[in-house]
Image (tube, rainbow, N blue to C red):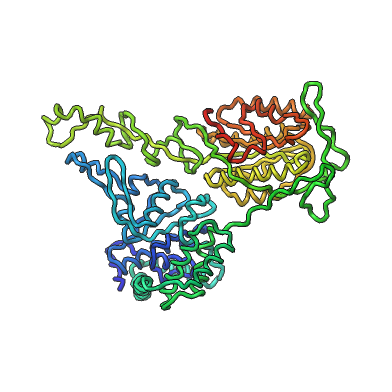
Length: 628
């Protein structure tokens, strides 16, 4: 029985049984409470949808099942030592022996570990927490310590997708995922307001009024936990689960295992003696929501005869695309200029599919001595916060993050002399102080500048170019980069995609990107500068990466000038800013006469240069390796 809260005691949580609506969210939390081995639950949705309220209310239920259970909230600014535990500085200095100070994971044992805004938490901390949740043990090996302790808890993460995504590898580690939204029924919303007002007026009285219902839910959880031990899935149900996950294009086998455990927990919750198809269907969507994938894009079309019509996906009312314009001829200065487009070319847009995607090699920025904030997976940076991995120590006059191991080593040679006048085991002076130097991974700001002119539509170039851009976008998403996209064609450039972390938005834009018209490359570079300037002013430590995808055949200049010459002059000016790193991906046809205009632009920018066919993981070198 859940004991009524005392009016003089701490403010009770909002009761679980009093939460209105959000049935799938409540079911996901209950299943994790019954079997924490499911892997926890991730609750995604807009603000004000009872995500935090439900997580805290679950802790009250578990406390009724196990008096030791508690809710432990992980601070967003937590360090690895705070999470896993580490050296107890006071005890170590007092006794001279290494002593372990338990962390958040030890306090959460037997209860609920709640991570609000889990998408903003450093990835290495999420990895550590999920490993402990999966194996039930926390292992600490640092600063001369080697400790392990039991660590079983129900893991609840909440997030607002508008504030950034959780990278796919970590998303998959959460067993269940539920999307929540505001209630649409006016009567339900009225009841919600009334219950919340009653709770705010007198939390203790409201909790006492709901105590009987909460106690019934807690008892049901306890019975379901006991029943789970004797339930098994039939071979037929296991086969059905496998077919279900394959039909949703799920990678790996984690989804199968999660559905199996969750179906058993659901059957136990319902009081059934055996799991059924209904139990599988009740939990499958929660296990598949964050794991299902679309089928891979179709491969690029086979090579066609040069005189064949270019494949495209045109709107029904659009005229067929015209043959690509003839290859540009070099002018007297050696630069390439394309002949004016034939009449009507401005209307000859075409759409091209996204070519086959592929894995790209690691694109890593150079490590420097700047200290940055943020999170991600692109590269390492120093951090002035107490976050990130402890990599070494340094002397300090004022220590905010003491490196006790290094401090003790610095003080050790002087102990015989110092301890004569002291009763403590170790005597430390200011000159012994050492501070931790930490590193963490952060994402980057990647700006794609994509040529969408008519020359890109020839011989399937745009199909291959879109495939390359999509591959780079997927890599950026996995590393939690912020991406933006500029497209240029006809006589202007436009910011088609403002800075975002959404791969869905970028992919939708890429699929719908039309091709046609002339090539205002200089306008594209100018737009890139216009887009980068605010980011550089806002954060002087940012080091953007700009990826230019073009054949370089500029035929529209600035204010009527020569297209290639204007682009080269502007590229030279942009290349002088050492804060910005450039990559040029050349889409020019590799066979026949090549003007290598994109290579000329790359030289002016001081950029890394690749042909579009060299972007695959087997060929791509690490961009920016050894550069500043």
